[in-house]
Image (tube, rainbow, N blue to C red):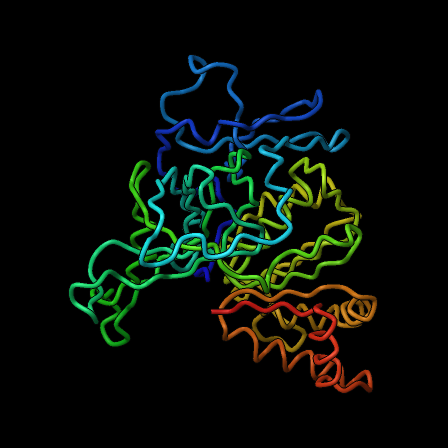
Length: 381
């Protein structure tokens, strides 16, 4: 799956220069909207240059296009043939025969006060490794497997953080949200390079044009159910577990998809350490402003906020805060999703059980019914 984090103060985030124009290809705004070009980067919103001579030779930031709330125009996507498949693509490329893709860009997403580094990595697969929202790619980092000399490194799974059309809206890229895994010696406080995460450091340290071996796509549990466009989707994430939800929300609110017109409710709960660690915060805030009746967004900042008992604020505390409404929505058929570090689940389960008991319900029976109804979706790592 994907490792954790992202930043609200993206304006302060370092940016890897993008030497390719592939992000700009295929992006087109539908309608005669007024565009607002702001100083903060909005990851993935590409500027459609009229001709190549107008385009800067190097883009130091991915420019953000924000459409005025009155028009709420969406971005045209191609190829629409990606909507025709009845079943999700699965395991098109396997570890023994991976697909060689190309790094388009690597953007640091967290602010200076965030613990650790998280990057938004855009990969060009040329339309050859299609996927659906909620699926994962496998990445094989270069080098030998230290546990099996002579063999390649093992596959690491990362939840895809874009829709099937990618950040360039042309079906040729996929985006990953990657936290750089590092290890600090508890006694000295110094980083131990020998214990760095091999794949996360490879991806976060990549440059545009670098090659990357990918497998997949894989996964069905986190696929976005689209049989009812007016359904409610409650999404709970810690850190980079927000990746699949970014794909969901772009499909719901950003892209002009002829076959999917979302009119329900999407409710995102995101837990991170502090404001500088927020993931895709500006993107989500834009949805909140443009679609206040269809999107809710609650943040749990463990190092900045306190729960009702005076302790650190975690996502389970936010769930408890809105428990009556959440249970009512679940009773009405809402889908609920969990994605992030596996350590998030015990606290969340305990909270849900406590709330259920306060309501005179059996949590075990309720959970069994949610699973039976396919309302319960969990992907933790």
